Image 1 (cartoon, rainbow, N blue to C red):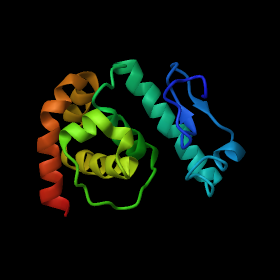
Image 2: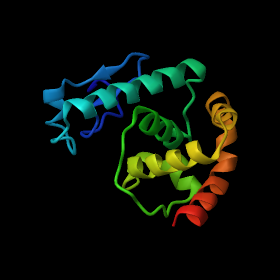
Image 3: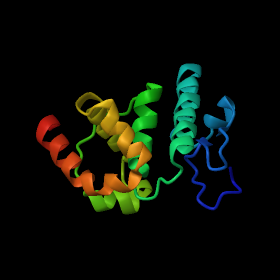
Image 4: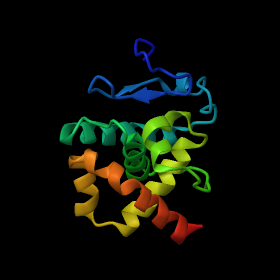
Length: 149
């Protein structure tokens, strides 16, 4: 993974080249924030990356909607994150996602909400046409803040 220009120390898997690339379980445990990963969580990581492969097959464009890709990957793989108060703007999510404190926890909460309140067709619309999601992101954030906090 180090050949990619956007590699970060916390990364333990990616699908940048259309394949699932993972560190071994032992190497995962050496990465920032993953010292306690167990075999079950490692399986969830594989599923998480598989969701990204499926997303890429439908539409490889994740510009500005990385938070949504992570929201689906985390929730569909069964991964969990600490509960977090969401206090971000749509532009922060779309323009600066990886720099946000707790970005994966934010995505996990957003995804859980969307999967329980939006139809399958609506979710798939955002997967197929990610360019439609930025216009909806502020509305989604407002709904979540109103209904979960």
